[in-house]
Each structure stands twice: as C-alpha cells, then as structure tokens.
Image 1 (cartoon, rainbow, N blue to C red):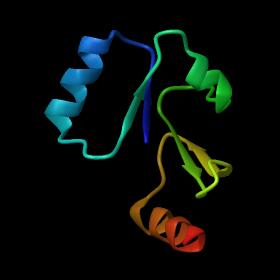
Image 2 (image 1 turned 180 degrees about the vertical axis):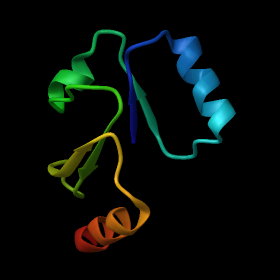
Image 3 (image 1 turned 180 degrees about the horizontal axis):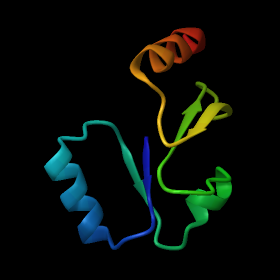
Length: 75
C-alpha cells in the first residue's frame, strides 16, 4: 500500500499513472495516515502483516533481496 499526503490528490494520481503503480494507494490530505503509522519522512517503507500490524519499516527503501526475505517471513 502506498500512502500519499504531502502533495495534492492530482499529483498522487499522476504519480500512479506515470510509475505504473499497481498496489493500493491511500490518500489523506490531513496526514492522519502518516500519524497512524508513525511515518516520519517521505519516502518510507512499512511492511504490514495480514492483521495490519507493523512488521518492519525502513526510511527510504528495502533492497530487492531484503524485501523478498521480509515478505516471505510474513506469509
């Protein structure tokens, strides 16, 4: 899931269109979603388990191998 809040909704729509993003995007112009997940910066990666609980996080990004390992541990 992607969380957008720093720009306007039209920017978020352009981002999805230009990047070919296929995962769900959550938009909140109030930053409530950032506060809920305690996101401190853009860009951050949060991995949630099937119950919606934070399993891991990283400021910036995970490399592909690390992300694959993290996802495998969640399934």
